[in-house]
Length: 324
Image (cartoon, rainbow, N blue to C red; front, side, top):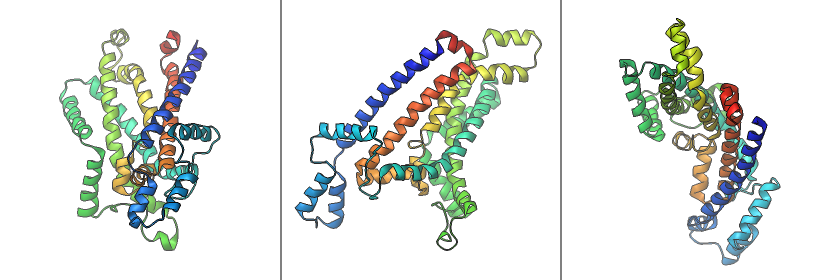
């Protein structure tokens, strides 16, 4: 039964992938302006018309939109993700290079944020309506209500500009020009953006875990555990936490997958050379092949994350596998 469920989910994922790339393609191509138009404006419309026509011809932009779409799908299936107008390189190697820098921020931020959010949310839900729960809940409301880029700006203003503890932005100091890459220096530059991302990720996971804990504390197995004389700490962490963490599996996998949307504002504010900043630059330049590659990568990761969550669900709660 479980095998059939995974097979159905895999087939559904293929349809979701096709629909996603189709919507993304047409939305991006319907945006006003294009790369050559922006480039012409920067040059004061100095390029001759023959050069402009040649550009559209070389990249197939002179073809009907439906023809461009089928060429796009064909290229994806053959592993050709296009050629960036702005950077004059193939899109796929560029994405992998920027992905490395994004993971430097998102991996530790996501792991720490999930851990803190799960622990704080579980304990807060267990102690619902207590002074601790009300205080922590209001703090998390404030954190969640304020956009991540505001926290990033405030972090730079306070810790970098006013106190001078951390650098204002970038991934390394100018000494990299003379001494090469210094990983300690990169970590030093990454501390502030990692902290901001951890703060926002923790708040999101806190809400989910708290609500999930509130839904399980009245279950029969909790009452049974209490009648057996188990202490509250054992009931919380050995029984309630395991069952309440089931929705957290989906959240955790999706957070690992959201490498673009999860860091675009923070990377832009901190000038961190990852996928988030690359997305901002590609949107500004109307670099269609690069934008298509970024959203294609994001689509693949989100779909894979959902499949992984479907596989992990029965391992955490066997009742899910039995129901399928």
